[in-house]
Length: 300
Picture 1 (cartoon, rainbow, N blue to C red):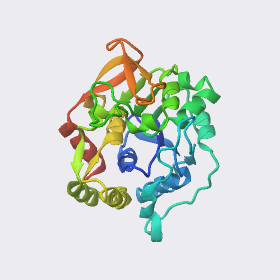
Picture 2: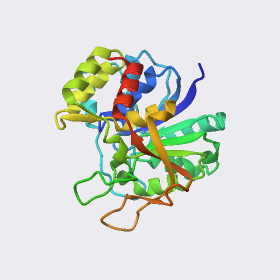
Picture 3: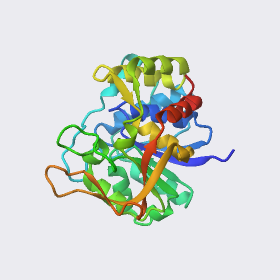
Picture 4: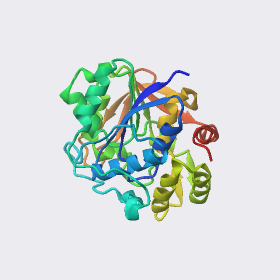
């Protein structure tokens, strides 16, 4: 079985879907998880959450590195990692991390060691990735591909006045830099597709508990999330699964620009030239097919 080398960059600890995506990668037999980097507020606590999930899955060999805490220019929008409450009381064994940024150097060294092989999966604000590309402009071309969860490209799923997806909104300047980088392939999975993949809280609890193992700490984190939401939307797990099962989503090419000027739409993703462009944009998904695939991999 051919494995795919993956680097995961994540804001694990805010929404539950990052943890659900990490569980998938740990159970996916075709995934060679080279390392995990954390980004945005309290990145050292997010690293501890990642370590707890890895340990629950029997993995203590995966490098975990703390990344950037603040956006490049924008005001911080998620300064805390609320799901670290699941680690209180010693419920889940985990390493404690310092606040030194070791993520950028780790990403650079790992990608340079395996040119043309590595898929970078970015499921949080793109601050780490933008800084990596800026500090070493050769890195984008040395990747195999970049898959990210962020933006929305075909329809506005928001009912309010702000037509922006959270990961892009948290650091729009970083997102603009990343979309402009010469990566051989950038695949973006947007909110207009991921919001089709939702599951009620009770069903999530049942299935996560049935799967046990790596999903046990995820279930504890989910209980924190469900205090404020009746559902879980599998944004990040869909992006992760698409790397291994490209048929899960239809894609359309285009050129993505990120709005940086308007005070009302900063962070909005705009597409030029649908059908022509360097970016691959997920456009359609069958939620039933996705969920069948996800739980076939993780159990439950």
